[in-house]
Length: 326
Length: 169
Image 1 (cartoon, rainbow over the protein chains, first blue to last red):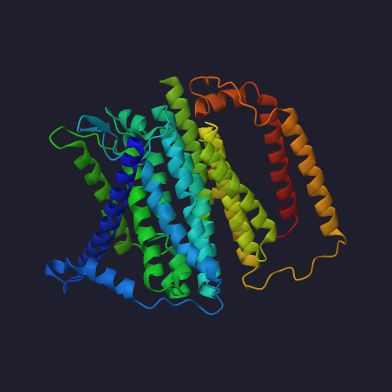
Image 2 (image 1 turned 135 degrees about the vertical axis):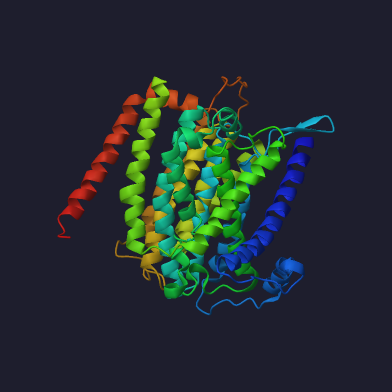
């Protein structure tokens, strides 16, 4: 019963934190995009636009909920729910700091901690594409369908390279458990031991979360808004939340796998180190969006299958040889 | 644990029924995904952690996505592909006969295996169902079937290359 209670409290906290971070990350992204383009960004609601997330939330909730006449109603309503649920659930297996003592009880700072933690995380995130595909199909619109199909193809293609680079880390750490993987990086971060793996991993996560320069699924110049074209109000909001929470999950995963997780010099507590590294990744996501143009679709596929995958496999073999020999 | 068994079992059966009953192919795919996830939960209740995760990653995360991709592409319009019952006559009757026969056989096997009788709880060996134990079993005890499966997949890959290779690109 007590275990159940602890898990319940942690889950509610996690959802609240993730959604708060999502709301403010959107503001910060818009602010920085503004600065990159020599504009001010949102600055009307509150000082420095700080109340913008609240205004956005109110707006998205009270907007009219439009369902296209031809839409498949059940699937149309199901899709955003699937997207958001999977995005939130994925974070459950991510530890943010070593276990802490609260009221004489050792509490892990992740909701679950299975032996095969990294596999659980990959299994959950691999379900995220359902929301997008189902949403695109259920809208019964050309733009939505094309966006959804592009997105499916893209995510499947880059998931392979992503998986291969993760296997490299697993071989180096000798464990599938995220706590063990972080512990293995106490002396040297895996980004230094396996730099090629890190580059592949980073490119793949940008493609996985459909961000610039891989935002083909919602290429607004050709597809209006891709899979979410027909969605309005809170259902559209849920797709947005899922996208940003996924970005957060992937940034956290990159931190855990390559940047040594919460390891860092002792003058800052572990959780601060972890958050700093995650923020660094989030900033790079915004930076990319501000500076890079979109790839053409066939180039995207070529890059995924003809460059990333072979390099990832070669790197994996080299890593394995390296681990066996040294 | 027994509650997990009943809930996941019921979901698995509901998903399986949904696959055949649903009129729209995409709904069939969703039902099949529910079925696959319920099976993963069942594996988990049997302490087969690695098996459950692989079930989700491979079936729900990869194979069903491809199904959905193709079906969404082919049935871009909502009207169902099949309007009539199909050309094969007596499908329904044959189906019922096959289902009843299968049910009788499975009940007989379950009864003879002692289903429902209390079983002496044996302690599981440590690390049961973990990736390491799974891998060791796969590459020692079951190496032959493992390699044969790889052979079958290889044949499928070669088949695809041969079929596609004939087209002039």
